[in-house]
Amino acid sequence: MRRSHFEQLRPVCPRCKHDRKIIAPLSLAAVAVEQGDTILQGNLICSDSGCRLEYPIIDGIPIIVNNIRKYLADNVFQINARDDLSPVVESILGDAVGPGTPFNVARHHLSTYGWGHYGDKAPASRAEAATGSDTTGTVADCLSAGLRLLGAQAQAPLLDIGCAAGRTSFELAQRFSGLTLGIDLNFSLLRLAQRVLHTGVATFPLKRVGIVYDRQEYPVAFENKDKVDFWACDALALPFQEETFRFTSAMNVFDVVNAPRDLLVAMDRALATDGAAILATPYDWSASTPIETWVGGHSQRGLHGGSAEPLLRNMLSPGTAGAVGSLRIVGEVEEHPWNIRIHSRHSAQYVTHIVACRKN
Image 1 (cartoon, one colour):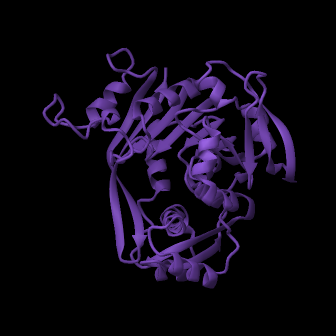
Image 2: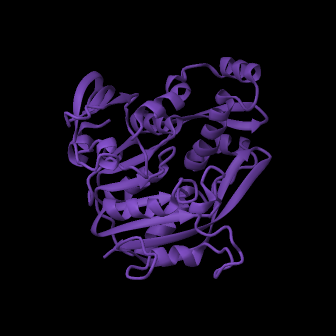
C-alpha cells in the first residue's frame, strides 16, 4: 500500500459505513515491513471506539472489506500461496493434486487474466509459442473504446473497479498521469498486479492444455506507474467517502457481482459532480449472481423480451423511473470484441456492451 494513496484517498471503515451508517476513517496502526513509499506488511484500524476493526496489509495489498473475517477464511489459500516455486516443482504439485483443486483453479485464473492483460507485451517468441492466443480485442482495447466515447480527459483520482491483474489501472495512469487505484477481491490477481507494479515483470503460469502450464516471465513497462496502487476492496461496499473520485471504470464486472444495480449506485456515489465513468459488460451472468438481481437475461415474456440493454439505459437515465442516480450515458458501443485465451486450443470471445457516462 502506497502511503501517498492512503493519505490522499483517506479510506474509511467499510463495516461502519455500510452496517453502522457512520463514517470512521482508518488509521495506520502498525508497519511491519516497508519499502520506499510502499507498506508491504502491517495493518489498518478503524478509528471508531465502538468498532476498532483491523484490516491487514499483506504483500503490499491492504484488505479493506466489510466482513474481513470471512474474506480471510475464504482466501487463506491464495494469501498463503507460495510464488517462489520453480516450474518443475509447480508442475509436480499440479499433477499430484489434480484438476479442480484450489491450486489448479488459481493457476487457471492467473493464466487467463495474466495473458489477457499482458500477452500483448510478450516477446515474439513467447507469443508464437502460446498458440490459440489472440492479443487483439483485449481489456486494454475495450478501455480505449470507452475512453474515446468520453471525448475528454479523465481527471484524478481514478478508481478501476474489478482491476484483476492490473492492466487497465496502468493504462489509466499512463493516459491521465493521475493517482489511480485498482481494486478487486481476487488476491492472487492483485498479487500479480503488485508484482508488475514493483518489479516491472509479468510473471504467471500460462496454460498449454489440461494441467500443463508454461511459466511466463518478461518485462513490461508503463509510464506513471508510481501513480498506481492495488487494494482488496468490495465494489458493493467501497471503503471511501462519497464523491472521492473523478473517474471510475468497471470492465466486465456488472454481470458478476451479487447486485448489479448496486454497482451502478456505488459508482455514482463514489464520483464527484462532473465525474466520468465507463462500464463494459457482455451480460454473461454468473451463476453466483441471484437471478432476481440480473438486468435482463430472463423473463423473455416481459416488455423487453429479456434484453438487458434497454434496462441498463433506463438505469442510466436520470429523472426516469428506475434510474440509479445522476449517471447519464454520453456514448456507447453496443458490440465490441473481447477475446479470452483459455488454453492453446481454446479461446473465447465476448461481445461486450460499453457505455460511457458522466455524473450531472
